[in-house]
Length: 395
Image (cartoon, rainbow, N blue to C red; front, side, top):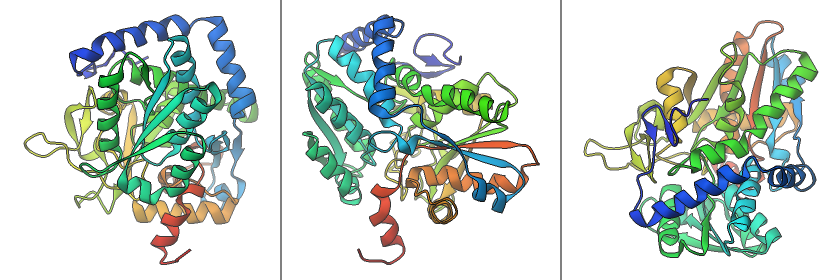
């Protein structure tokens, strides 16, 4: 447990929002705390996880991938096999149940890679709520398949043309919408970012990933993993799997940021590796900023990691030394995308490919009997055009 007082992780977290949102956040916090322990709520969520999303997702032993890289055993937590193709549905299902119980009529969401937008549009369609998704113009261009999916599901996708036209700017617009429509709208944040209680709430909805991983690995190997590796943008999939193991000091936790074109350049999204503490989207956390404290544009080939901030709990875990944060370049992620595809017949999302790349670096250091779990947060269908473009292939 790393939340030392409500809403704070060490010095990080909190609520840095307009006064008009404080009552809404208090209402949300009270609703979450009421329903998180309500047997009827948890039973409905568990039923949706099982029958709608397809949980538990498999913990898959990547035999050929392991054998070719070293002596250890490498498992993939297959979040890509969730309904909608990524871990994002775990949190979306939890929050839509809250929205319904709070009497909200409309869902607002932001998205980068489109996976959270698809998850939000999916649950809004299932529960009969209207849905507006804000998405940067750059991300709309590189994730056109997911944009079409959202519209098929009945969501309004609003292009954001300000700033870098990516996830940061989409989040800005979603928060502006929420300030103006807070009485009827529910802001379904997709990551462990934003003002309290969002980082805690999203982490807890995603923690099913880590709970399943522990149980499945104990059944398969009768031991805890030696390493758990996950990518970090805002950080929801990584907090979801790390949370179960934070209190297990023998388990090494490795978070992988996007180094883009290299940490020595200005074109990366390595917030924890190169950022400074500051306030973004309602919380104090590490962020990429200039000497005047202005937020810098982030860059990654992966739309889901292309964000200049990070969840406040990740900032605490970095400063405490509990999680080792590393960065992987676009080129390394693309090579990992190709390698996993060819060795296991699994096409990972570009976000997940960053974790796979770090797993490939660590694999030769594993001794016989050691186990590494890589969280495969999403599938790569959505990234085919981006990968093809990087190879000079016109589809």
